[in-house]
Image 1 (cartoon, rainbow, N blue to C red):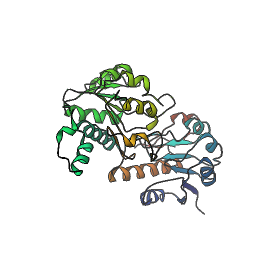
Image 2: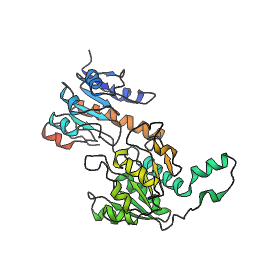
Image 3: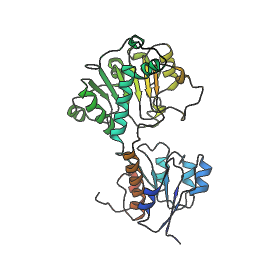
Image 4: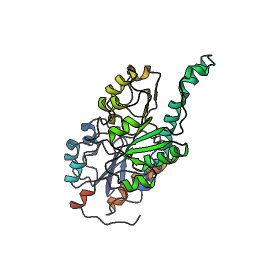
Length: 333
């Protein structure tokens, strides 16, 4: 009988070969037969697990209260908004994620959405395929050089995007109350408050984690401050933007456009108003993806589990306050 039981609550990958190979370092049973969508399904699947791998399943206070043996929950991704961190910490469960696996991919995707929106690539492509060869269908289009890109958040991904946007001649500003002016100054970026960013930006790209404080961060008040020509890009989490306020701002031409990889509810419903808006670009929560980033993510998420079950803190510890409850060893990474 295996020493440890590891359960994956849900996943959308074709193969779990990378995870399985890493988990084989320890004597463990890896249960992969679930695709949990509800709290009760997670409890049924993982109540006696020593470790959990999870992607989108809800790991709530209710779920955590029923985890009898769990030592670590490792989530596929950067964000941990699907996991109740406070409940896990109270119970002495280590939560781990992967904060550095797709920095280039998300920054590249945000830039691609910005460029496609600015140059109206999707609209022109559609017109050409319909037999309309007429650049005037894209009027107006403006050059990017000296336009202002406002970054909401200035962590690793927006820092990556900043360098790429500056290479195009754009001026970059940032709003992030948790980042010092010294950091933004190193990138040649002026730090401003959110209201100023909304007023002054030609493009706004959102890059903050989803928390109770940031939900609806960009709403009706912020849209009222924006320039009529602004384009809003979101590759972070859908609920950071008040979707109804966005739809209203787009429909009234209060703002010029939006390019979204994430939405409040995913997948998008077939009758969603954004689907009929020509000035909106949509991709299916794909910014994180490349073959390289997927392999990196899978390996690091599995290694988090091996670390904790071997008696070490994981490299990607999402709830550091758990150190007051559990006492593992620090490992040099």
